[in-house]
Amino acid sequence: GFSWKLADHPKLPKGKIVAMVVLDGWGEANPDKYNCIHVAETPTMDSLKKDAPEKWRLVRAHGTAVGLPTEDDMGNSEVGHNALGAGRIFAQGAKLVDFALASGKIYGGEGFSYIKECFDTGTLHLIGLLSDGGVHSRLDQLQLLLKGASENGAKRIRVHVLTDGRDVLDGSSVGFAETLENDLSKLRERGIDAQIASGGGRMYVTMDRYEVVTQTILACSLLQNDWDVVKRGWDAQVLGEAPYKFRNGVEAIKKLREDTKASDQYLPPFVIVDECGKAVGPIVDGDAVVTLNFRADRMVMIAKALEYEDFDKFDRVRFPKIHYAGMLQYDGELKLPNHYLVSPPEIERTSGEYLVHNGVCTFACSETVKFGHVTFFWNGNRSGYFNSEMEEYVEIPSDSGITFNVEPKMKALEIAEKARDAILSRKFHQVRVNLPNSDMVGHTGDIEATVVACKAADEAVKTDSYDLMKALIILDAIEQVGGIYVVTADHGNAEDMVKRNKTGQPLLDKNGKIQILTSHTLQPVPIAIGGPGLAPGVRYRTDVPDGGLANVAATVMNLHGFEAPSDYEPTLIEVVDN
Ligand code: 3PG
Ligand code: CO
Image (cartoon, rainbow, N blue to C red; front, side, top):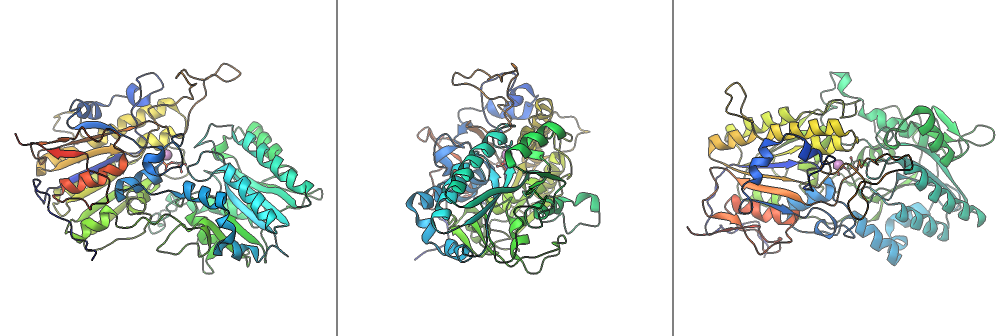
């Protein structure tokens, strides 16, 4: 029968302290001036690279290597951390939704039947990220769902759009809205009352993430305004109230970009009104609501607002009796939401769960914006501890209410210090962190700030000198305790900040300006191993040239002294006798 017990590694010892450092959004690309990692001073990562090919290599972090539909899909933190933690490649949300729509299975499922109960007398509301980024949602999936829902009886449809500019180019929201509007007008020709009802930028309206600890330290109210993001969405989508009113969705986005100078990510909330100035699509009793995003982290908060009878995060004013379904179930532990159109990937038997069963105590830490990445995503989209006696997860509150180009150092040093303390305490055998800088600042498209961010992340891995005034941090502490380090990344971002043509030249817009790339990339990421605890003969195998993030879990299990389960992707390392 099944057993959690892992076999002993034939050559590697148990009990070493392993630091697992994930640099978020840190890919490998040709050196040029839009490669912020290249431009930044990064002595730590440069020195690790000198150990190639035995102890430094690249791994794949995008496309099918992380369970995404195609090789054109850039990597992202959800699928990246899932792969790192689970050691296998699972068909991810994007792919599962594609299957369900293509086969039509989505329309036979429990979730669709549930929302369909409202189609005769109520409105179907679709809320979600409007782009083809493929990280949280995809426009073509929305288009198929609109078609399918109308063919299955929806007579009145309202779409509440969240503009992107983060997983796609800034400004592209106008084109996506035009495509959507075109589809809606075709539905109207067929007698279906279908319209855009409200909108707003994803980072300012609805799509906040990980409220977890910031609410418990609410004493300092400055730190806590993330529920405001969700409330702005609630006001527009449910109450039909927003500071800006327009007659048409495309016009709304164009005009707000022009007048407020806001980027797609930060567009203020708006509602669409009729000729009398009345909102065309508030959510009311008897309506059906679907949140379109397949990815969980930025949907959990709104899902709670839509689903929970008891709710005290903000004043909802009205709590309509609706049939609500998520595109996927976003949290399997919380069963949130209760109804969903497509079953999420079943990511079970993750490395975290195995290690706990095999006596490995774990510490995990990041700041709020990436905290769930090294816990929830790492553990297969599962919240909480496997065993609270053996694990400690620490969240450092992120600055909120700012864009991270203003504070590009973020909390990297604080995270590194927490990791150092955990290592030096010798209470944990795995100390895992995510350093968010290169990703979070990369997403702002501010190239100068991203250079500062990359330097800050590099500095948080190891102190740059033997300067005794400098405090020890992660790799220094590993040095002290005779441990092992693994330094890697979840996907690319900061290594390429410009949109390029097929031959790799920067693409210019019609004014001759470069187009800033705020999104992730298709690039591979580095993985470095080392430290005084690493057995002398350990080096990278040469027979897994296509290795990806999913190969890391088996590698780390080996470093803890265990063989990985047989269905895990193969380890990247071997031990040669010398
Ligand atoms: C976001 O949610 O911020 C971006 O869409 C993806 O970023 P992440 O995958 O690095 O979290
Ligand atoms: Co990112």
